[in-house]
Image 1 (tube, rainbow, N blue to C red):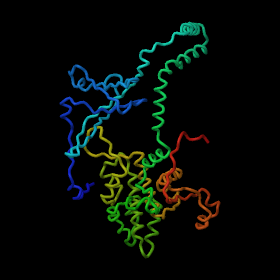
Image 2: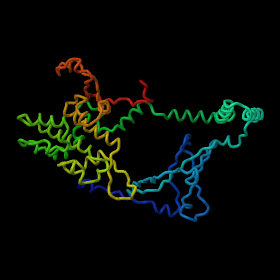
Image 3: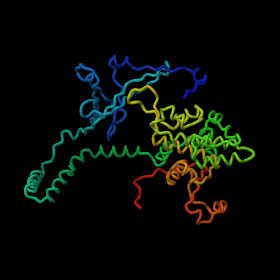
Image 4: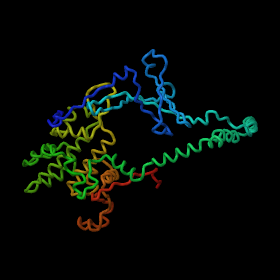
Length: 426
């Protein structure tokens, strides 16, 4: 696979200089740090102090740091070593851009978990009222009580709550709860976040025409469209099995036979069907063989390198290699697989004028019908039973059309609300 050349316009602009802040490290400049606050978060104006060990012997000791802050009522303390250190396998850096010099400086940012302590509780002495009586009673129960009584004593001890202690922190808890609940996302914000995370092609939520929701130029770039090798399909007596990379798709095969049987060939439809066959073939590449050039070429057939390169960019992930291998690795993830399926359905919606039988591609993709319906809904389609008008147009009786559903994309585009809570038992 060959990499595409960058446009001259891209290389003519100002270049951004990259630099690692080694000088700051050697000079002893502290920070930045990434702090994790489980539970209560201090105000943004809180000032943290950084401490390090007195001895600098050894590389590990030089990196030990303690962060500390005091808000008057609560103390915050965290460290990157010992039992309270945050365990992780990632290294974080913070990038700082200087607008004047156009230089981007990368600085190490260790992650430190911050623990909080309510100062009023540090000197609090437990109440002794009735304590001796309860201790004596529990001792008798432990010595002579039944198994059930012993279990009750242990349960009470585990769940005991000191009300006086809670009174001292009531104001802190009340303020914290009010602050946290005010920051909770609204229903609209939750829906907007869910829409952003959908594994679907780029869309226009404000489109006024259904063909502009998932524009064909975003599904198949103009450069890809021009190089789709459809001309061999126009030759007389051509065998589809010798050209199509995915040979067992009833939808693609039947669609091409219909398009090629007419006197005036619909070249646009032939291009889209062949592109859909490339997508189906790419989905069949085993995850462990994505980086094997011979296997990929054998499965994809005569797929142009530009199209194949875009497939890898859109539908695979490239995680960091644990072995330190510099070669780029590709892998399928659940989200990237769903994105590839949604891409196929979006192309098929263009072929079917955005109103198609929901079961059309189910057999070709070896999926359950409920799964395909779910993917159509994630694209914003309405999946519903055939209407009487649709049944009459297809020449079907009500009994024959039972269970048949249509996937219809309409404007304005709307997505289903995210589901909350566990599924209800049937």
